[in-house]
Image 1 (cartoon, rainbow, N blue to C red):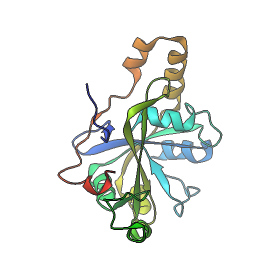
Image 2 (cartoon, rainbow, N blue to C red):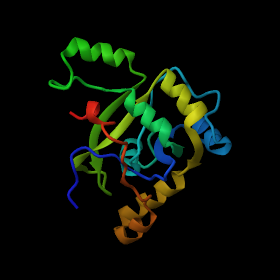
Image 3 (cartoon, rainbow, N blue to C red):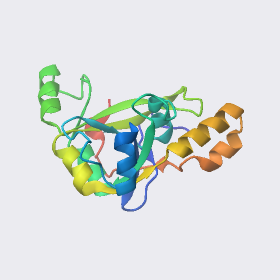
Image 4 (cartoon, rainbow, N blue to C red):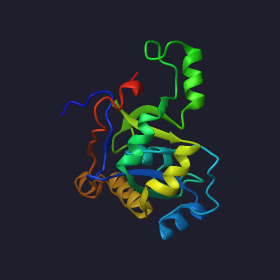
Length: 197
């Protein structure tokens, strides 16, 4: 199937979308146990959420990079996710989308969320010719994410390690059965227009 350059692909239901993050165990394990982020989680820092499981595997080295040893699947409300998209700014200046660099900088400073489109990854974590959404949350968006939008938090580190072992052994058929099923996500009419380079 031909993929457009920009598309959100995710596990989702009628009311939720699953995003991924990776943390050190002191943050990730309590979050998964309690279904919410612990007090040690830093609300004053930007937190990046990723709808793509394989992009998270690329970023975290299959959950083996230092500080990213616990991979979390965080199910959040679609309403919250779409609020973040509506209030987001592209993380880089794009001629034709922004009036000028100064206007983009003002928008970036005000926005509680920002978007990056990075190359999606294949099973060997090599870049694909289409892009995957990364959504950075700060300020109001971070608070809403932690306190309002989060439905569940699941530790998927064992899955990450299992998939990695199968990829390394060449058993890609078994991998296909284990991978989270991600499909195109419709964010509603015009929701991404201000975020497409």
